Image (tube, rainbow, N blue to C red; front, top):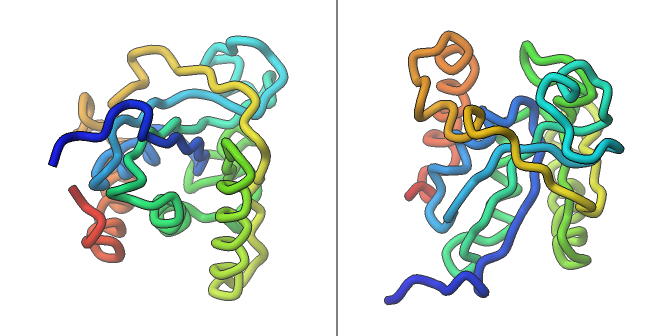
Length: 181
């Protein structure tokens, strides 16, 4: 079977805390072609990492995921996404606190919006608290600088990675092994 052409790929834009964590996990899924860390949902053009971290731009740290829907459905991406972060905590994921770390799905079309709403409705009863994930249309995605891309692959022994990313990878293997590449 030949690889899908670029036209057959779909894109998802997801924020679940630090983009390094979400990127490291989603890259492991079969059918995911690329994951780019960056920013969405803010009010400043081409924001810097430092301004986003200071909460000055309104952006969330997100990942832009290109995937082959013939290999992995958008719904499956979302189920993994909601497994590896805490969608019930406003503006926080683990040690990272601030609106830039909010849970967010920036949908690309009405079909994605409907799938996101369906998934949230399905999983909300499984949580003790309400899901606070922001669900908004994607307006603009800004890629982060190169040193933020593939951060876990480049820095697997970094303390942040071992403490925060490794447990998410373990959760992925435990709960979604059938989706791994």
